Image 1: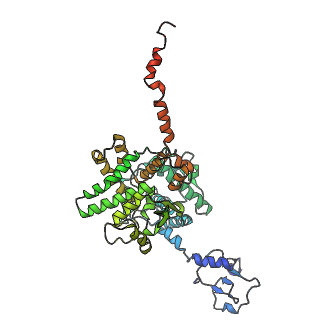
Image 2: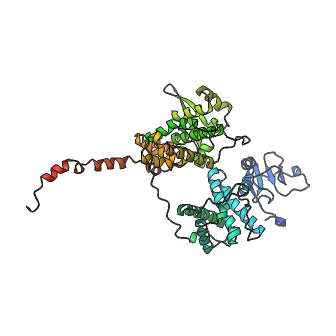
Image 3: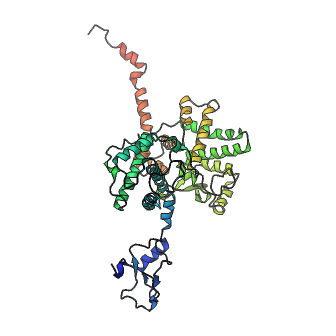
Length: 466
């Protein structure tokens, strides 16, 4: 401690302060920040009316002094964004705790969320879970983060399984805490996220202990078996039928919606993309290439953990995109440069700008195509099993179908994993049903189930002769 109770400064080199200035953690506008005489060293401390340029520079060169704790009025941009994600929701249920306690809890959770600022999808998922928990804690349970205990955890788990119907109604900002009761696997995932949050808050000394760590049984994880896929021939027939379905629309707006729905269905299946990856796709992410003398296309996908990976685009996906936008392949090459920030998915209403589509919009688009395809079973000549599986298709199922069908075409497993971008190879192999099919054929085609079995039985001695 310095005289007067001021915090002792920590000395770091000039490169460090330059990095802090670039990241926004340190601002040149902070009171007391000034350059020393040699212009290569900095000093951050209490501002005074004395001109510090007249003060002799310290003996060490390229050294600055930065207070260990920035002034309280300095708020980092990322922290502000995390705090905004936890904004209170307008609700008819009044707060059961003081507004001061609510703000303290929001700031504590925002500090935890700020650690995931470079992982946008993780940040959004964790913020959604934390916001829902804080709303329940402050309105229904009447507690705070620090008062939350093991018994309150049981109450929250029961609430997730049987929530108030009003929680399924979107608020003024369009957000709804729940769409309905959570499944056991979703509840388990929510509790695991909150346990990680409390572990962080304990280390940050925001709460005294972590009551969620006392829960020994958080439920069993969801079964990891892959969903059975419709046949590859059925998916090809659906793709060929989509233009007919679009032409049967009764209005221009319905035709545009069906065309966009068909394009999303096609891309989700042939690219095996995740929903959020498809929502953020732009023309600038498409990369033309030349392979075997032919034009080939790559898609630079921004996936989990903000990782950018290149995946090949099937000709089905490119042809669907060209047809939808009414452009040629040469025009597409030009479009990737001149309209790099433009979304691949045109909006149906004006005034929406270039913001990406929501995940829910893509989900609803797939459900519309699946429902329509199941209704056209005679036209598509689908089997009853294929019709049932297509009718229940979701965006993630299309990704799983593509995985399964690639194994059926004997594509090497390492290439399938690369397209699916699974971190764990075992996740990719869950969709390989070729061994099951070989097992089935070996058993069903065995001699004991053929006509030769009758010949074998005829050679047995008559009953009673042994």
